[in-house]
Length: 388
Image 1 (tube, helix red, strand yellow):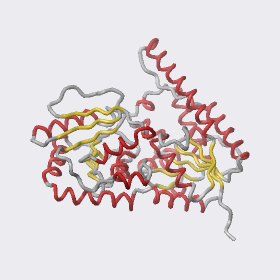
Image 2: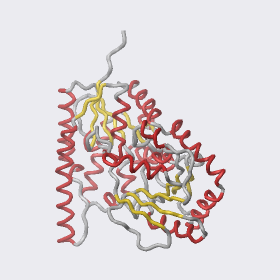
Image 3: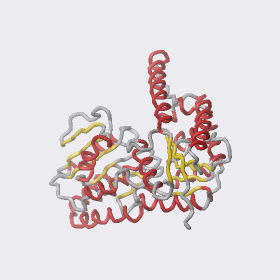
Image 4: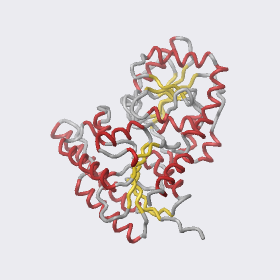
């Protein structure tokens, strides 16, 4: 007789059934975990916390700009009192829902102070220390000094409380080990799949490129940290060499580019819940995804590009090397690589189309083998089964 399935309480900063929460990562994690466990959640609670936090954050930002002449970043849910309350709510929910263990997704402030003996696992992109040390993450590097103490206390508490961690990149795993003393045997490095439903991937994947222009696509909300100005510079250099370049920009709230001698199409923010087909059509029709981030915990957008068989070009910073597989799903460049060299690499790809076509066709195959959610599920479920 088969043993009964374990029940998992899934917690996150946002609704676990929404594809917009944490770039779709939480939704996919839930979908995969449901194949091996009975998954329950308390989404109503995270919605309340998020609503309160958003309004308080806007109030603090407005007040600090008005009276202090600077923008103070303040995340109320990452304060110790809120973290203590979160832990108590999760513990009660686990009892009432008869959960065998708790699985948190990027929410140290939820899982750090769960009382009792129930086992807790945490899946996160990186650590607070790694984000703070990367000066381009303004929410963390420029947060009030008193908040740093709260962040650190919560992260250390989560490190002590959780019996297993799942991170997508070696960069974050090393920080967890070196800065918080977590033994490597409690850490599993396994990349996320694309934040896209599998049937949609199969429908939109384009292993061949048929456009007449060299369509470069930039995707990222944080224009400066994601290297937006540098991408525009590269596009301009390509234009000067005679490449019929076309730049598509997705993510920034307002158009950050002025007049250019080449075609720039600004798409703003695309919400996947509402405009998924539009997002997929735009990305799948790209010659390459070009995002030259200065700091990045992982970079799920590179995984999404590879799922659609679109090569990516990026700098080797943070955890990008685990999301973009150099020579298999794109080109990983040293952070000191000049923009002339970046442009020259794209120009060679454009002018050597037979070689590009062969490479592009293989990108999707590498995604299926090395970056898919099926692979993530296998690693995570085996680790959990050996612990609970």
